[in-house]
Image (tube, rainbow, N blue to C red):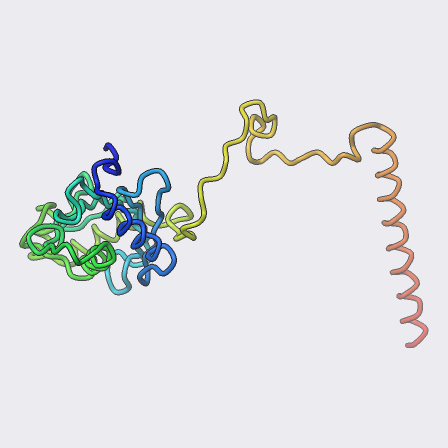
Length: 229
């Protein structure tokens, strides 16, 4: 999706920058914000699954896209993490009133994020994008909960789902010629002292000497203990 930075008026961009900076510094509870220096009109976030719901323990990645008519027109929200929820479509699109008829220009991005988090607690099956999830929520909550929990465990749990500091960026890639990269993550660096035969012999000698000293000390301690008896 193309950036809308050039389409937004300067005063709107200033307001967006100000709000995004405030969100990154003081995000709502259970939500992290990852602002992009390159495109402020696409905001990536992560929401913790609320306790007491089938999404508890999971972390759900999401993005908000600010269109060229923002804030007159609400942002569009998408879940990037797969989720079984009545109001989330198969492509991640979100159906919530605040992003449609209930939108007001003064609501702001923080309100949108809080509303989407509340949607995880109180789904609205009457405006379902995922019809199967909406039907199960009405007819068989136990099955709905089981399906939602299963997808949470598969897609929203694990190291990749943990909330990180919004200032943490991606780690730089290693150069293609890096021998450690070719060797794989399990390869351990070779100590410099083993670079030649002389150093290797010296290291072995020092190791043997240390081992002998420890053994001798243990014997002496044992003799002293026997004398005390």
